[in-house]
Every structure is written in structure tokens, then in C-alpha cells.
Image (cartoon, rainbow, N blue to C red; front, side, top):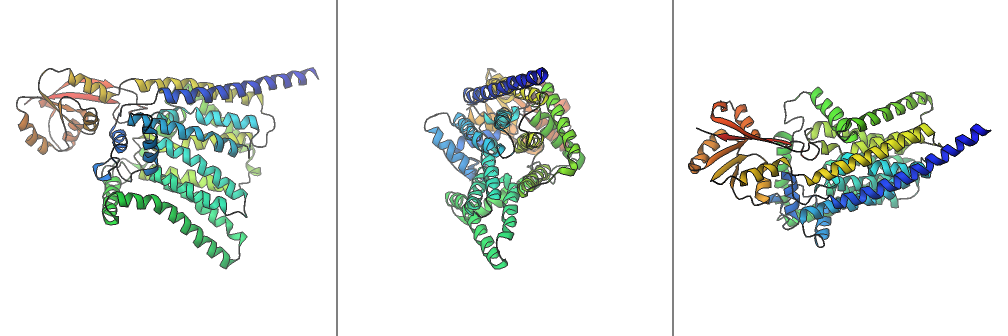
Length: 499
């Protein structure tokens, strides 16, 4: 009896600790997102989004196609109070992600206790890589926020089998999702499974009518933002031309897809799964957190093996799994695996699924599981603070700009994407974007009295073109920044060109 009382006492202590730590974590994370919101673009894409708040023009890549209209619209509204456009977009991300507390909690309550649901919210909100992306002026976090609302509404629609209101609501949120991030198209699988699941509610004729109406409504919601973009760009024909040009470039040239790069399937798969999802998405590029996530995954795997014969998946669970697999394959074949931000929805979906599976129908959480949850929330919170504070440190490209501005003589620097940031901050030296050696040879003749600099990407590009440029360049300086914030341009090498 005494051991039972002691066990119950410890259980209450850990439950109180979970509530205290979870609520404290959520509160701190919300505050830090606002404090460390990035106010100067660090990359080409961030410049695109920032410029769009003052002049929305897809042909000028403000932003680039497909325009992300709902993300930009929200940024414009915030920009009325936050003058800095880059910071306004970062704050918009923070506000949208804050709203996900409700759908994540409400969705969790279908499977977990109140304590488990609060822990779930804390785990999602404190995810390190999610917070890294939140303080940046990029559309991924805004899309993830809408995604959680969409998943919750889908779940509600599956639960209320005789209601069409939530089906329409699902279509509306899916249109918001694509209007923020078109690459989240695979999540439409959930909506299709929802529509197919309603076949038992109708006779064949009624179901065909239901299907036609719902698909028409879904299409109409998508046309709202598509039509707005077409009008803003001079009409449907111009918009289609722009779309075709972007699609060709993305899938065949510069998009980093399976078609446009020469890396093997195994390399892409390992980069996506091990580096992007595990190391970056779940581990936040921190060994301790990765170890905790590994322990958590192992615990879940053991539970799954023990319950194999008892597994019963509802239509919603099938939809959830299908959306995860669909987006995973999309990220594998149709996205740039060099940029981990493309996998942003997957880590939080993994965490949600594992927590729900482990704790489902448990009225009382085991103490060892509560210790694991406490460890994850505390560790994620500490590392989230650490990485969000890193946003204050200058990126490699800004270090490069500062270095070049200190040179007191005429210079010209040839870059790839770095020149977009240089133009945004109005750097006081000449800079050009260059891709081919023949263009470089022609252009540099205009700068005979200038020192000529090249970045590593330019040099590597010349080497791929078969140009033996090693003897004509001298390494000047390395510039380093966080690979979490600058995955492609975290290490910039500057060379000086000499005939």
C-alpha cells in the first residue's frame, strides 16, 4: 500500500512538472520568436519575399513564382505596424504558428489525456528546426501552421460523417495551404481520401452528385488566389507563360530535383532521411537532441512491435499516413534535397504520430515516459533558444559584404546567388551575377582598373565548364555561418582573380 501511495505521489509530481515545463516552454518560445525575428534577408529567396511587400511583381521575382499570395498578404498587413518588411514576414510566421496551439491540442485530445495533449503542443512548438524557420521571412512555417489547421479539420470531417460543412472547410484550408506553399500539393491526398470515405453515406447517384459538387467547390477555392495572381500579372496567358517557364526551370534546370541533378537515388534518399529529417528536422543538428529522438523512436518501435496484432487504423489515420508518404516522395523526387527546409512538415508529423501511438488510451502516463517527455521538451527549448539567438549573427554573405566594403579601392565581385543580397542592402561596390566563363571574359574587360573577385560557386562553375582557372586565382578569405540558417551558403570562399 505504501509503495502504491509513493508511486501515485511521484506520478502527481511528474504530471505537475510536465504541465509547468510545457507551458513555460511554449511561453518562452513565443517570446523568443518575436525577439529574434530576422530583419535583414540572408538569401536570394528571402530577398524575393521581402521585396514583394513593397511591390508584388512575379516577373521581377518579387517574389518568385507562384507568388505565395496568402503569405505575402499577411506580411503586408503586419508591415503596416512593423516597418521592416523582412521582420514583418518573420512576425507573420510567428503569429500563424502561435494559432496552431488550438488545432494540435484539439486533435491530440482525440487520442491523449489533457496532460498528454499539453505535452504534444509543447513538443511541436519547441521543435528546433521549426523555430529556426519561424524567425526567417520564408513561407514554410506559415504553410506548416495552416497544415495543422487543415489536418485538424480533416479529422473533424472524418469524425462527423453526416456533415458536409467540415468537408467544405477542408477544401478552403487546402486552398490557403497551396496559396502559401504550392509544393504542399501532396497533402491533397487527405482531402481525396475524405471524399472517397463518404461513398457509404450515399447511393451511387447521390455520391456522384456529392463528389462533383465538392470537387467544384475545392477548385473554386483554388481559383480565387490563382485568378488574383493572373490579374496582377497581366492576364491568364501571361500567367500561364510564367508558370510554364518556372516549372521547366524547377524540374529540369536549377530546382535541385531528381531530374535536374546527377546524384544517385541512394544519395538523395540518405540525404533526405538521415541529414534533412533526422539530423536537421528532428535533431536540430545537435547530438544530444538527436540521441533523445533516437531513444524516443526506439521506445515507439518496441511499442509498435508489441501491438502489431492490435493495430486498427481508422480512415483518418490512413489519410495521415498517406499524406506523410506522399509528401516524403515529393520531397525526395521534386524538391531540392540540399535545402532541408523542404521537409519542414515531416518532423512535426512524425513526432505527433509517435506520441499519439505511444500514449493512446493511457489515462496515466508511465513515469519513465514522462521523464522522456520532460527531457525532450527541456532540451528542445534550450536548443531552440540557442539557435534562434544565432539569427543575430551575420550570415556568411553579410560577412562577405562587410569585408568587401572595407576595401578602399575599386573592386568588382562575381557571384552566383549572393549578388541578390548585395543588391538588397545596396552594397557600395560593384557586383555581378555570372554563370559562364565566356561571359566573365567579356565582362571583366570593362573593369581594367578594378580588383576582380570571384566566389567559390563561380570558380566551381568554371571548373565544371572545363576551364583550368586554378593558376589565375588566389584564395583570399573564408566566411562561415550556421548551416541551419544558410544551408547552401553557410561557407563562402572569396578568391581574387589575376591574369
